[in-house]
Image 1 (cartoon, rainbow, N blue to C red):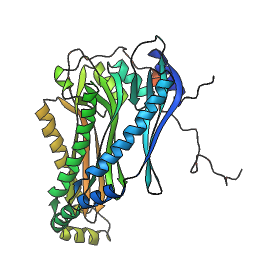
Image 2: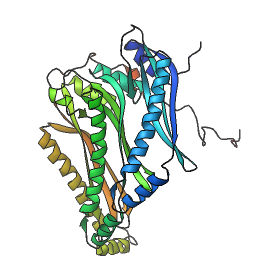
Image 3: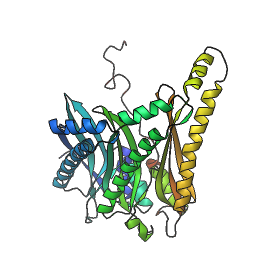
Image 4: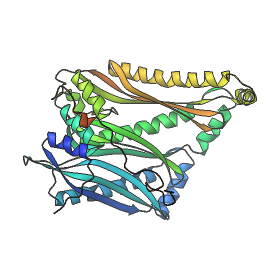
Length: 372
């Protein structure tokens, strides 16, 4: 029978180097509704700000159901694992579809065990070659609201320039909750690392949901403490491989958010100055200060962990309201680790080449009204 796989040519090549062949595309889904009681509970909690547990749980349950159905389908195919797992949420007339898609892989040597892996099969190759044996696709989520109370306190502080600690605390608290949950799942799966973590924040049912996805894995070179506190990393597969080749291991994914207000006076002055050419000093100093606070928090946490460096740091900034900006810094703390090494001295080019979309344009990759 012809096989239909979601793996690209480069991914199939990389898996072949590790003794795996491509199998069928597998899908799992679950369409859920919050329900009347869940909606009421969420609405009450929404007034207070912070996590909305009913929504967090509903989303988590939907994801678990969809994920388990995909795994069941893969095992029916006799697969050794699922590579390239991706997940989505889709809204349909008040209900939400939780969808997981991946591609089966088969161990050509007939080895035991079953795994699932987030990210591409190219990343999976990098993880395996760096000594991280995949166990399971892992995710941690949290649904949260700024709340009326937090919004009121924050609104008062926007009259003055500086950090709005109430906002910063909500953002930092919720995002670290998601990280704690993905690490807890890895621990339950007997993994000592979660690698290739990707973070997404999306509006959902009037709230926001933050979800982290990654691959729970095990590396024998990691310290014994990692069994209780799995290391976490958002480094790409290539970056993780490069660090392992140099003898470095990830310690923890670090995140810090700073919410800053330009202030009533500063906002008025900045608006006035926008009519004239030249630097808007108020905005320059505001963004600089927010950046410094967020990065200093990461440095402090890394020092407390005994890390040597924080690498792959990415910074994001956005306006979240009139006169308010959010600055976020995220990166992976690393340290030298005895025994950390790669199996190969160099990565094959197939593990590094970015895949190209073969659709051209338009909503579905083509334009029906294109003139020739």
